Length: 474
Image (cartoon, rainbow, N blue to C red; front, side, top):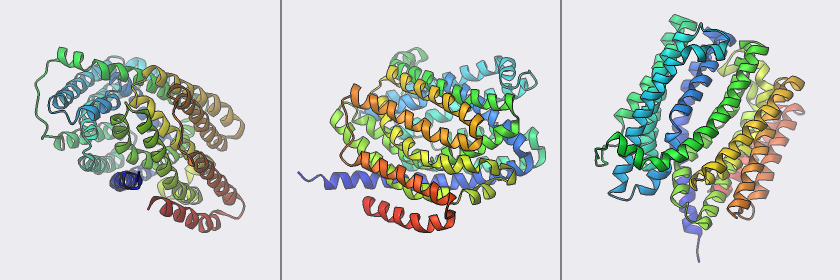
């Protein structure tokens, strides 16, 4: 049987999604570059650290109060989208629950703002800031509901357009507020960004799906399955975000806001900017994996195929990112953030373990296996804190890079154990060797950076890895 055409068609589909969202992500990153650069210039490490604490706290609160509906609903939307009756009902349920959870979350954050301020800063001086951020929680819930519908219905171009306008709108808000109000502009920038995102989501929402009126009671009843999975995902994400939050607070209490800002700069560059590839592919991967979730054999093919694409695409990206890390920090930040470079150089090699674990971990969600997902994310959070704190004490920001690599290596071992022993699935032949090759490329790039220099290393390894990626993905 000839399997070349289906595989090639799937590869083309994945790469198309990568190109569409990759282009949007590049523009979003350019906007973020401007925003980050201006924040570094006008706010300094203290302001970036304060912005980080607000964002970490807001993300933790939003994930908790939304019961992770944006992620869990994608599974149901993907399964039911071709059903003319169940599809529109699922969309109505998601929209109703998103608005309800958003209102409840915003009110809860406002009521608990003195406590949140005390836990974050050791006093209640930021109470009103968190009251205002309660509005952002509501806006985020509403926009996420619409984005989930777009994602579940495979409307990737509309989703990309919505994300693009949100990124452009955010920079339009951030520049004047940071310039005129400096530190006092941080909270308005955060809220203004979510206002723009919600407006874009409402403008681009899918109007060709038949509208179904549904009561709140009926929405809770019909959405019980996605809420149940969402609650497990909420617990998992809460644990993960709590670990990150605790480490940020630890840096803030034991050191200074400057340490938080430098850490966040390094983490953002490694985890977010390189991670745009994960974001781009996941828009298409998770719905497709959920749609075949009842067939273990098809899941095995999809997972191995996705891992192959992710690893080949990441190899030249990681080489370029490691070798150009000094230049990237100078462009995006200021000389005050150069301490983060060792974190970035070493940590960038961890993206290969992150890609492998990410591809496998989505299997758990596609199967709706909430309890197991909680176990894997709890293991990840424990590994994160167990590695980050002692290695930072021992080696400073270099230790954070080492911790990042080891963290995702441990996480991959955990999720692959579940993938292999709970579901009886394997990686297709050659995938394990490809992961080993990717890790070797990362190690050689780091070694070359510290011996012959970044530009010689870039000149040697980038053409080789780019040629390998082209040859295997064409």
